[in-house]
Length: 429
Ligand SMILES: [Zn+2]
Image 1 (cartoon, rainbow, N blue to C red):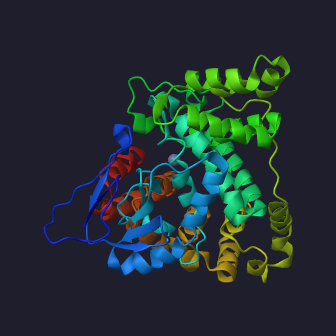
Image 2 (image 1 turned 120 degrees about the vertical axis):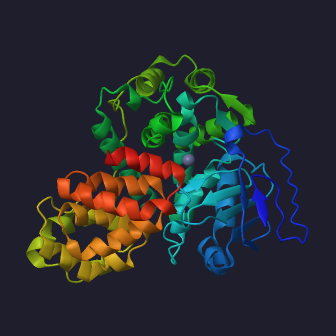
Image 3 (image 1 turned 180 degrees about the horizontal axis):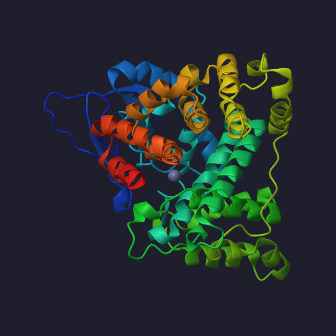
């Protein structure tokens, strides 16, 4: 069957000729087509999943809350204007987590965890049906309009579907991402501004996490300054006013000034629009993020070396909690301690895609060789560039790690997407 970023068939036909209809205006980067041994299964009357037959039932179960997510987003930001919302599960050579092609989000099979623990990615791709696909960045210099807004929308949908506790955890994780990225780039680096300058660059090379997480934090600042109720109305109206148009950062700023700030000097000082958009680094008025659940994990982190790890997996349960625990393992952790944690949580063999990716970073850093075969297997089995880059970057920090990285890359590259090969080759030079 062939499917597109359009109104799609739900069954294979005998002629092999397929026609598609997309009657909404879309930018060229949102045109996509996929052909394969794929079948369709409905989730409810407007959502469904396309996947290879062996993954179809699993995928439909994993994404059972898709319809609820669309409803939650509509309640916040107005009607979903595209008709159907389906997802297509791609082979592991797909180089991204997801791509928000209209009507049909393309997804990595890595989100099929078997326990619905990674479906927040769906909330992100769905969010693009408003920010990105409905209101589109005019140039890649304005990509934060797509990704920052969508990260904000993703968190809001997540709050409805997964609850406030999970939302608070996401907020803290997202802040860590921002801090890590700013540290990597340097806080005076112009690439850490929201409005970037991609002139003369491959836009793909200019894309990193900053437009996502810094954009999100900018919108959180506005939300806090004007109150959530008012901000929700503003965003809904913003989507309506620019529906099916491409806009620049400056268009957004004018709209913000005219419709929300309205010459209120005190409010403008509170938000600091220019600092957020045109200056590098993190502005002083960034909001404070707290997760009480993460605070509990932080106190566990302080004590487990003294009292042992037994029973911890009963206290640290969700993907977000495990990720937070792994991210802050002590810098001087021993191989013996890594093995004890692994025995308690089974991260090496039993973790979902995200847990494995996070766990393999300290495993590489601290030479936890028990995990090496699993690391290799993981890096050969996926082409998700961002996740692979995290691991390759950790490996190349030591000369022997670099040799190992090259060995894995040589085994894996025939299964990687071309863009993944190019990006990873850059890291291994
Ligand atoms: Zn996105």
